[in-house]
Image (cartoon, rainbow, N blue to C red; front, top):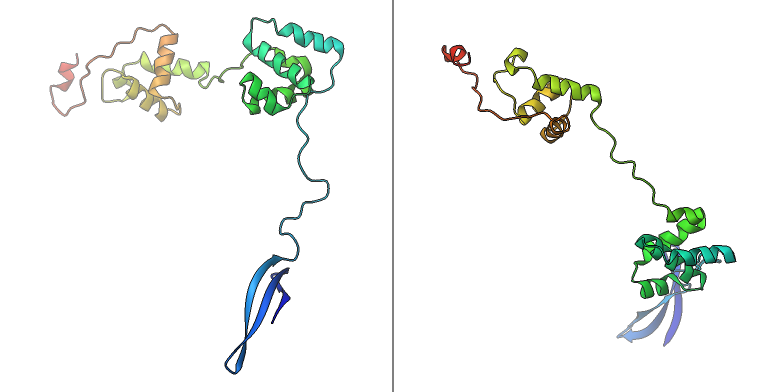
Length: 211
């Protein structure tokens, strides 16, 4: 004979079909799993598919202004106007992407930005650029090192290289790379030539060779 039983496992209820059968003098049970009594993933009230993204309600003047942007010579202006007008006509983001070939994340970003910033999104903002890493004082120090003979600074070579100048600057608390030093030299129109230098030696004739 078979019947359905409910078992509680870790606080959740599950149903099984239990079949009783006799094995000699003993009665044994065989269970078949049917599933949970309640769904494992219950949708919360108010949850569900999110409403599709749409442009805010536009006035006739705003629609006309967007239409005029379609004649712009700048591609980014035309693309944004086209996206916004299609959204105004009730097209979903997926449909706009299919008709324009523009990726969905970009379309969503344009619509969201217009809803918060309006027509400001049609003006390109100037890039602030990368902040200046080396101050004018530090530049002057580096150029001062370059214009000083290395041996006067207690170094055991006679000519600077970009790598040596970078290493010495770091000992003075200036963390600059050889590439940065090269840019500083180029910006100041300094003619820099790498020379073959005498290395420090214990040779007693070393000083005479460097005269």
